[in-house]
Image (tube, rainbow, N blue to C red; front, side, top):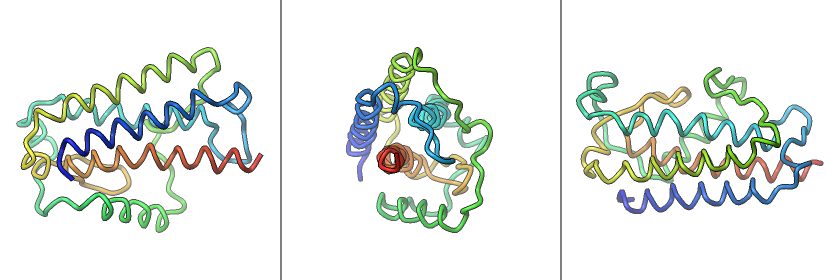
Length: 177
């Protein structure tokens, strides 16, 4: 998938998620179902997950290289990255999300502000991608807390899929009510 396709997927998946959260009733936004995250926590988690990716994509390339190194393998395809993520989740059922990505509930009064924040973050991230060449997306790496080192392209794939994954979780959780 070339970078323009990645940008489109990233923007589309985040817009679908934002629309889903926007359409939830006030009750469903913070409805607690067993030990599952509420929809507001799903939103907070996505914000906390996109923020460091956006920040990393704002850094000069020499800083990325110094801090994280360079890839020693080609980037996985989008389907292969998704498959790896799902397999890693399955193999690490007891995995606890690191504190910096653990969400708090968003009060209803902050729902719209949080949705705008995510929209702005996703848009900023998408706008940073064109400065990288296709080769650079496959050369520089970033750390992922569960999957280890990912190329920039793989991190974008993950970010696009991750929001879709949580969008599905919201639907599944609300079906349990």
